[in-house]
Image (cartoon, rainbow, N blue to C red; front, side, top):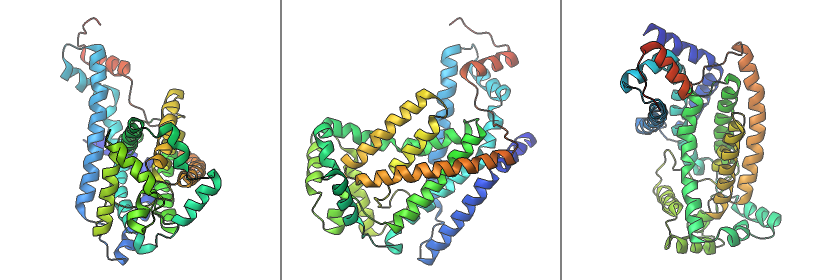
Length: 371
């Protein structure tokens, strides 16, 4: 137990600069919201967020160990798994990541409360500007340019499915960088950029340049310019499920009823879907070429989907990409300072399946069946 407490302190010390900045930001948000009569400390949202991160962590561990067991088929699986955790240092590694996981748990709910409170800080007055800019850049509404290629019900349904898979970046991706990325500088750069994107783009720019987006200009602002696009999406939904339509309606209902909370805010500029997808592409290409290609493809799908599914104007995504790239560069400079302050020590990454197997075999002498 003492060893695990020591690892917990070590993890908190390694991430202290990021955690301190995040705590100050969180406290500022809570104070701002309190000034508008909003209680950002309601426990249910934090509990929900914690459960989602915990589920993502457990699924990651179960899948990892299942992969190891499938490849090595030990005679005593439980003993093999237990020995793997002890001898490979996975338990210590998991404890070191707890402070950053808790930071993720407390941050997103207060971010969600701030996003839901945009109308209290600003008015949705920028949609005309973004529509005009989109048309000036593309000659027409960008969704019309995409329509000949993506305007088929099955394709639209698939894009909507991928758009919903984006949530895995938040939970599975967050857990991955918390616990399983051993490059200390890359991990620090990712989290500095991650929190900065949410705060500066998702709150700062979203309030300053408040707009609702194509799917909401009709019901919220009485603007009919995207009725044709929405009519197509509803017609496509009659053939194949377009999952985003139900979410868009739920967001409108929450807005109408004044219900705030995690995932309930409406804001078009800038697109956080595009920003976070692009951030993961920038980070994952540093891990491997294949990861970079996969996350790059996912980012492109999200960018296209954000326009085709009527959530965003194209310029929402362009601004997100440029701003996220600048934040990533600044986060790199901050990460180098953090790494130097910590002696550039790398946190051990979770061993591969073969490494876990060798560690377990050495410590338990469990006989293995032939593969």
